Image (cartoon, rainbow, N blue to C red; front, top):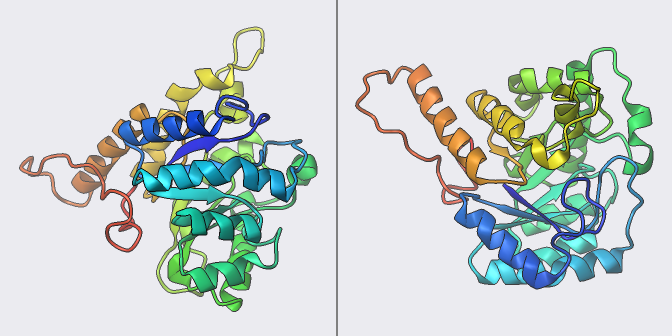
Length: 297
């Protein structure tokens, strides 16, 4: 999943793709580099961000989604608002990525149920302006699983089919660095929330986030710049995909696409095909078989 932020204030690439034509061109470039999905967002959700108005969010994303969809791209809308999601679906989006997991807008679950599209439910404790004040856990994996289960139960109660749901542990959202690492190391537990049959598909969004920059800080303690964390992101992608993540959300696609292919072959060998006869293959592209097979993408 390649990121197209149509915002002036996103943490890594804010302001780069504000013009619709530039955003569309960037999305198509991400697809050429190997992205299966292009995730378009018109509202920054970085720590401390102030919410943008609904009409402005719609203005930012509408033409971009329509242009990408017309070009054949599989488009995701990154929004917490049901009306924005509805407009995006009408413009050609195929998936809704809601960082609030249904908590910010009570109308979102009903829209998703009626539309029958895949829906990313992310672990969320509140809006960006104060979310890091809520980064307090005794058992981060256990608490994130329990809270995600509550979010999933709520949207299912509103009519969403569990088969539509993809879960996201919310790396960087009301999480400190140690919380992020713990969640990434135990992704298999995030997929198994209980009560809904098969494990959920898992989306991981760690690209360029500050916990990577702090890990790779210079000797003087200065964190590595966001855009210089792409190699670290690729490392996380490989590990997450090898652990069974369904999708990774990234800013720079080419190296991450390679990492996913390597991880897919690794998992194939680990499953017992060590004969050397099978050739490494890319994971199933896009949504050809009911929005993915569970293989990393």
